[in-house]
Image 1 (cartoon, rainbow, N blue to C red):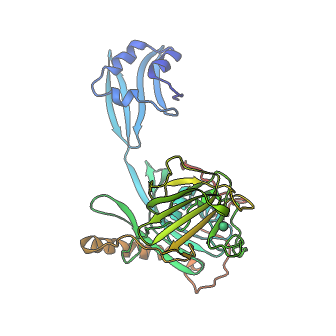
Image 2 (cartoon, rainbow, N blue to C red):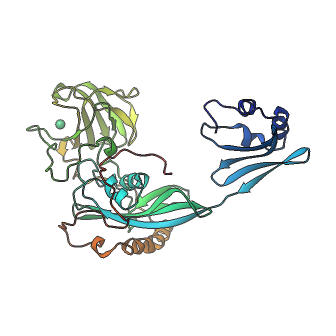
Image 3 (cartoon, rainbow, N blue to C red):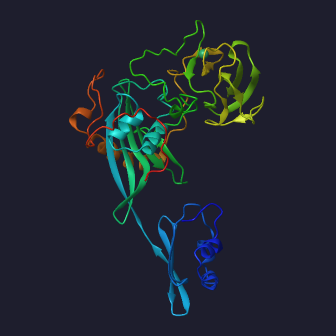
Length: 388
Ligand SMILES: [Zn+2]
């Protein structure tokens, strides 16, 4: 196993291996690039007799292994292909406490749950809008190698029913190679503004399926949405725009104001501090971190105060109709529609009857039993990172 700052020289010395073998292997044509670049955690398999190398093999990419074998007095190297195979899995669940818990109960990884949330991030506020009884179906890739599961791949299509409203999305890669998600009729899921300017994964304790928006508009006469989140939680620009104010602003405390085109502006208050690059005049992009949650100004606890204004008039950021990105058209639209039809049909297929869309107002609770048993405890919305 390769350690931090390890080199092959160090490994050979540590294991008392023949250094001239290393030199001979390195001298093989086209080898060094695949051999000398080591990352901590890489595995290199070395077979030796009394320190003399018989075989060295190392995975150089997901699909290739470098194999060096002693042939009498010299070494021979070859790259072995380990092709991967993509399978498509469709699974769904009903949310009764959190997206991640419902996903886990259906054997859906946190990574896929997070991708699912990102697909719908412009329509659904995953911090404040998720309700008991919300449900989803997701069709996604699973990558296998020689029959062994490696990792999850892309989300190909998904449906999310939030508060009785159905959202559907299909992944599409344009001729120029850009991947994006579109509604079944070809409108972009991506919009000019994110629904929530904080990452829902950071707001772990905010979810309560029975609450009735206790943190929305709690301050009389204040027109915005409050996101309770730990101090230091990154705050993201809801859309592309230009910073027009940064500094202290009365009860808002440390605030940033961004204007987006000529009509829309957004305001972010109570921040503990600003991101380093954020000054008046700075151009920011959607999702860019502009500051961090705090409780400066009139705030009883750490939270982000967020306002969305159209021509100076406050709108409810959770329900305001957001300007969309460009829809597909022409030949791309044709290609998309042909791709989307079978995917959307597939989304409806696998779920057991209880998961099929039934009339609004469902009271169904619990995860759809695609897996043997629900995960006990849970509610933990941290990302576990790479799937093993
Ligand atoms: Zn507020």
